[in-house]
Image (cartoon, rainbow, N blue to C red; front, side):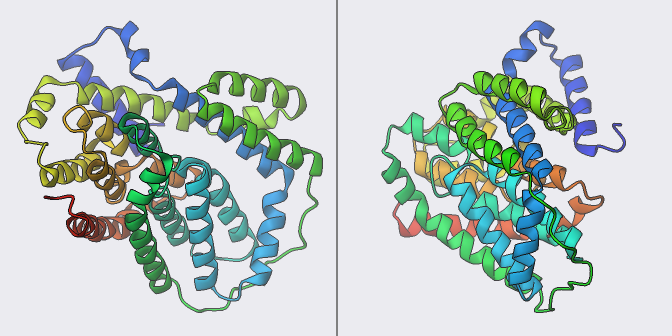
Length: 366
């Protein structure tokens, strides 16, 4: 299993090294896991599976492919859809909707599926920058800074706008104007309307409850309801993805607590916004942008610079954002990581330059 799952293998190796060099009591390890996130992820996987079982995604895919003339047009449409959903909900929720939809489209007509999944992953990272609800690090910084929703959104709007413009240009260059091949298009499947209607309502209620920190209650309701009504929605989800996330929290938070790392950060003079921006962008590449945000917030209260830094830090290496892992994991495509990094790493360099330039123009670098 480990040889087929490189991310899981790396996490297991890192965990073993940490426990052998700086062991922590096993009873303390569950406390390192953000169980609200794990419970929310489990519920969203079940709800997304229920949507797939309803046949609604296949029907929507059939409708979209009949209205889109070229691969470039379809790619831009999916990028915009993913970005929009990520601003209203979260980047993870957007992926749970758009990635299965894209895979359903691929079943109807042969598409450059790896490139599509990659630009969708970039899209949810770019779109989620805009609002406090877009991603976990924004939510944390919004709550800890005490600024209003509109103030936070206004501060992040320039970065979100430029990132989306860059991504749309990249998408237009990556995909050609070749007409879509409809040779494999079949008649749309019937939709299980009761299942779709219940799941749509449950989806909204679940997200609201999760935002109110009642993910355990929401998950219990999902498990009980679908377990009795549509058992496949509960049993046939990606359980390995949940294990990967649990290990990720344990390993990354253990690394962040190492005295050497803590001491090194204290010596970086993070009160200097330029140093903070560089630290946030680069540290995200090593431990992901959510743990990087929590760690660096202990050394600086400059929430806007930190938000810009970890936002661009979500690009680049796959570990930069947990959304990258979700996108690739949901796609289930072999050999995608190499192509992902060929596109995402240059995008990270450009995004970091743009982020720094905007902060200079806004006078945030002093």
